[in-house]
Length: 609
Image 1 (tube, rainbow, N blue to C red):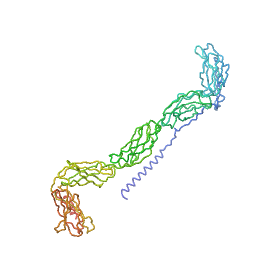
Image 2: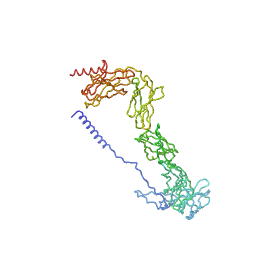
Image 3: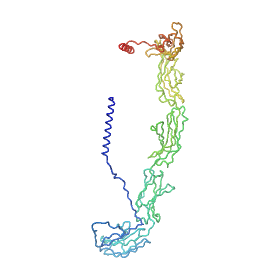
Image 4: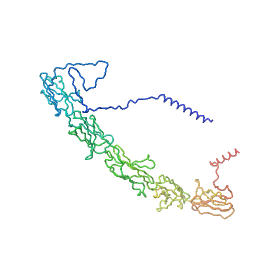
């Protein structure tokens, strides 16, 4: 087993031990928790008039239990009985005449003390039997007390003396049950405020039970738009003081809170309040389209127009803030956004040419962006390309120029070629060259004037037209006699020994003077008759040496204006398979890097042999 395999096994064992220890620790240290925050629900029993609590008043001698109260819980100790001596200085109730149909009770009493200023009549109800409240004051020894409809009530009298002191209360009257009636009042302190989302919060002060006037008491929360349908919510819990109206459109709503019982709805006054609900999410605009795609020919930018129908104000579900157009290409995460003010229903946006897009629109208010519309898909047409990235022109001899460029970074469609225009700096009429190859990155311009300044314009082309020009200025050279040229050769068919087609390639060197063009000379070896090709501004010329196995001598001639320079002749033979390719170049010079490397390789070979 190799050392690397041993290392891997050792690491796997360590990881397994760590996982095992972690699993044990996790089990041992696990704790159980009891959720002490569980919700506790309470049931409240609403006091109704179906179950009536009798008011029972004990004597002043003993403290008695109510006959309707539950029996006391069993105890191991004897109950403690408290006795209180009845006070003597109290008025005495002589008569208490209950008149339920009239909702009145006539009470007469006999005073106890002297120098009495007046009498205070207090009332207690079945709703709060231990609470006494002042009903009225009298100087006479009687009162015709008004009863609260639907309530069980009892009364007592207290003497108030001239010196400001008072007597103990009299013994309470017997209970008088008033006839039920319709409430005369409605909730007060009614307020409304905007909720979180599409809601209104309505609050009020609960009405005391004395104002219920009978069984089956309820509140009614009503809301409606102007002259619209009325919506209602009935609330039977008299203690409730708030209600949330939900799912409202963002419009002015009128709200009121009234009271009622089984006998009818309150006849009292009520207040109607108006308010706007909390903002919600807007709906999506309709009829979202894109136009202008057919009008982009020969334009420098793809300007398209998005259009949509105005969203009704109520569908904004809040204060309208306008729209957001979202558009993207392949990746929705790289989407772009355009904001549009409320009240505008179209937007012109500049997009890329020859690109597939998707787009949606959504409304927005001060709080939310709404639901997006349906997605529309479209493709922008081709446009004219941007400038080429780079452009250079190099003089070849005195009458030609080699142009090289880099294709545009943004093509705005599929390139179909290039256009080059050139002219003398001081001339008005340009010459042009059209290149149909979209992959081309260089071209030769010929028949230029020697020693002359030119301007060169190049532009890429799509079906939409020519793009932006890249302009440079360059001068041709003065005519000079070229240095000795070099060339390479290659048989075009390396398998057929009877095919004599050969490509001759001129190899310009940076260090030398070159002509603007060249031609090839060749003949059968030992034959005095030479053949010559026509002049070429390109770098290669093809010649046919025939199917014979004879040897040929080949040379090239560089031409610049009236100057010509011929290379050394090279012998080429199809019968020699090693001569399928070859070249004629200058031998390496001493001290040149090539020369030193050659010597080193030869020395290494010799030492190893």
